[in-house]
Image (cartoon, rainbow, N blue to C red):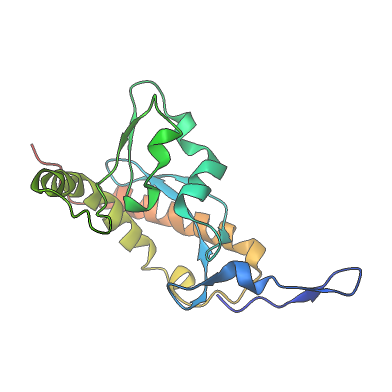
Length: 174
């Protein structure tokens, strides 16, 4: 995305809007979206676009409150970016990979569990790869930031249509 312009408020003070969009990891200004993907690859939910630098994955999940919409028998499979969310939803079935910490490497059992989860999560990664085929999401977003959510949702619906016509390979082990 392009670097946001700083604007003056009604008192004449400059508002620093750029800081919240800057991602130190990617060394650029970013926008973040959250997508929920069904086991067969269909995108079921897309969040609003938010500043990518200042918003953590767990914070965005708490804002959308997506996990509270899971029914009794449903579960959610998350990636390592959502570490710690299980304490917010103790009654939900959440499958998260183990994350290595400083001076606490993963055990062989934890590594085996992570590999097992990865065999199911590959569908999500392939769906995200389908999203990245659309240049409007890959290249610099030069339009109004308010229009990014709409563009992302349109691309998500196109990806859903593509997956409906040409389903993703089934990776789920028997």
